[in-house]
Length: 282
Image (cartoon, rainbow, N blue to C red; front, side):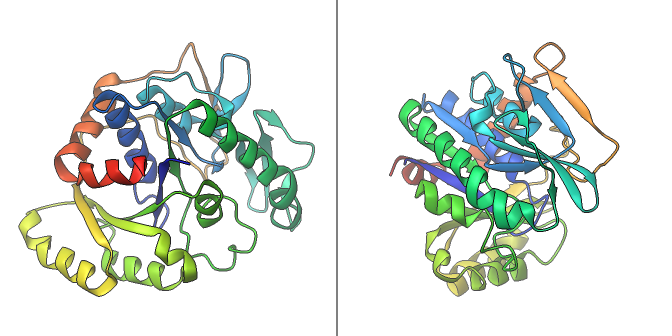
């Protein structure tokens, strides 16, 4: 299908932020009917759709950025942590009969009900939208999860879309995290078509040598360097908070159109948009 997937070298690298901006940019400036998608999200903060189904807040925000009504096919699986070793499973907007605990989730659920729901959602998106912008979770280099995961490279293969890898410069070690991630991807490395460095502070000229080194060493294009966006705020998800349990509905869900446009403009001014457009449309 036509589209792109944003994966990160770590959690909190800026995947949700970037997908939100890309949804706004390509729907606003390219008049493209794009749909956000994340197969599995983990958060105690959720959004209730118009037909009373529960989904991730991040994908609801991304839908709004794309000018769409949030719907559960954009996030078929939501995990709501209950304690350190168990999460409530929300499947297609409704509470699943069993929690995600012990080995049940990875060895049973993901390979049966989970992947079935993901495939149905992707099929619906392919038939009803011009392109999909997919968000991964955590890192695709978590090799202990690769056999059972349904949120990173497994989904890129299911949708057959190229991957852009995003790294957080602000936390340090971005070059090592990019190289290390690529080294651990195996055959999936070929699917990575671009790298984005995110949350950069200071003089961008000082980072140019790092960009050149990355391209020369990895052979993968650096699509751009995103500055630290300290003045752009969206509703935040706290994926590990056990006390949040916050639910947003259509009535109290605040969408900041100016924030969506600001993120889109930031992407437009700092990334190679023609390159990304070519990937999405290919």
